[in-house]
Amino acid sequence: MFDPTVFENLKVAFENQIYDLDTLDRKVDIINRVDRLELAVMSREFALQFTLAGRSEVSAEIQLTATLKDLAAELLELKGETPACTLRLRFYMQVHQVEEQCKQAEQAIQRIWEPEIAPTQTISYLFGAESPSYSNVIELGFNRKISEEQMDDIPELTQHVLQTLAKLLEIAH
Image (cartoon, rainbow, N blue to C red; front, top):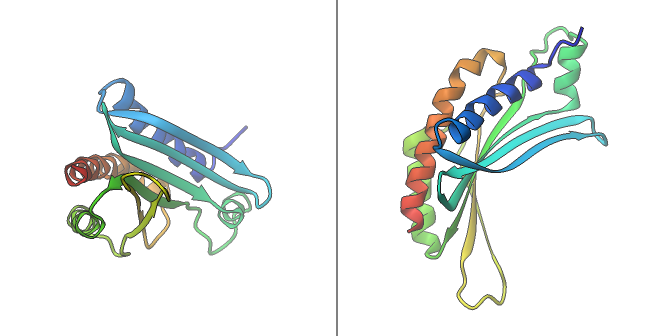
């Protein structure tokens, strides 16, 4: 009998939450999905990228990863190891006034998430473009891995993501 891993169970929980927001509630539009098994290092990655419904200017991505060590700890039932995965959130937006809008984005993330690890913002632009627009990728990591014990937190985490998307939309305009 197949016994799903922590990664698989969390992946399904995130899928259910986000797909319900897309298909049933029409609050979001899913724009990308990644479900990867990296054979070179035997790791797993799952990501869902989405926008608020009808608002493509800012997107969010929920990424879940499990390394070989994470998977082995669970499958081999290694003593002293707790099966868990890494969770990362990314937000993608265009900015025109880099200093001002990035500062506002940082303040919004701090208010909504109160993160223990400071979020990073990576700015890039297309060289030679007539009117430069800058891509801002905001990444929010967490200081610990997640397991099935945090599954009940997924709806609240998703609401924080939606709140962040709405605030970043305000900042983008």
